[in-house]
Image (cartoon, rainbow over all chains, first blue to last red; front, side, top):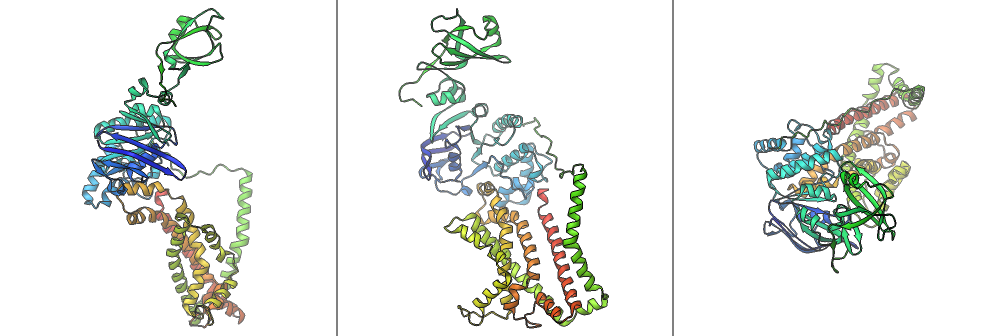
Length: 322
Length: 280
């Protein structure tokens, strides 16, 4: 384990940000802290960094208790959503900041910065100021700056949140590749489940100051342990006590007015997939997802009556409730 | 190695281009120029004319008279002292106002503008009764240079504080957190991250304060005592020359103050644009 969080609690005045949270982050992993805003994920990240102190609980990094140790001495790298670039310094000086604070020889800093500029694909831009870079370039500079000091853990707080969708998608893929190269233990905070699933090898889902489930992305999607996690990873239908994903609903045409039938309200063609909005005879709404071929084979039209069956469903036991 | 290139073209950094203006734009420009001429340029030209209208030698005789030289020199010295002190203390006050929360902060914030709002002669009277012969603290700095410096510190403090305060408030706190996670202690964070971002604001505070200080009359005239060659500042000297019907000497000294202000504004403008080159 690189990071071990034990029984962390933190409140801000009346607001409980974290309530008895424990989490272990394996060496070399890329773990995402995923949750809606206000779930406590950023606070947890800042506690690992030492930028916030927990009210209770301990933080271990590489087996050493660092609770109460100042951020300067934790051996971490931190990347902020808004880049937190040193605007008055060149890109080169930004990246070399941690090394120059450590009073490393100039030549060593220079060659290390060259390496990092290469790594984050900013070669040739070292003499620019951050204000002359695009958002994506600035965030890569911030990443290089954090990596320069060889941190035991790299902490990323919504690093792509301020970027537009195209750049964000590029950077996700790039971050994944970078992680595979550097193998630095990384913790990524995000509210975007797609981002977490694409980038992370482990995800801790957070909600209301608690961790709801920890696991591999696939595990969380296929085997959620509670309704919150299930609903966080995509649209869910309630069928009685059961939860069913839209693509697990099977439709079959039946005569109008048949017992228990549902009516197709809307068919939304999304290219390969088609979303069908259904109303059951008791007024309950369902969303099904089919392929365009299935819709054509069944000859489905708006207003048709269909029988609905679940291929796969989940029932959560009492105590796993929301 | 990651080989896929991600470099998006950098955003264009061109300055705002003027849009092709219609008739409205030229009317606006005309009004602005006429107004500036009327309020600023014509009086300045008139002053220059009355200062050097009698010829260069008359001007030179007037400004090189021992009393004028002493008054101008004193003015620049006390102004520099007051401004230097306020550059530091004004930044400290701004820091406290922005970064510390304490009861009555808003009251301090309001109080700060008092030197702006107070008629300067009233400020002079206050200082005189406080630090004069019968002052409550038994401190007597009336009719001394220290007294003049105190008066100038009082009137220029808001310039220093108000120049730094908004810049400090807008400073990105994540920048300091980032520096801390990179190993920088509080002193290093201040020196390498905060201070460089404050320098332009401090400089502009210095420029404004200095321009104000060299021309200050009301706050100075009572506490200075106006002893020629000792505590007579340029503004008081100018007033004295007018009283004595020696308007040429008054205009000459005024022109020197005017030029000093101009040079200061230009110099500080240049320094500022140099230290903020990263923002362009």
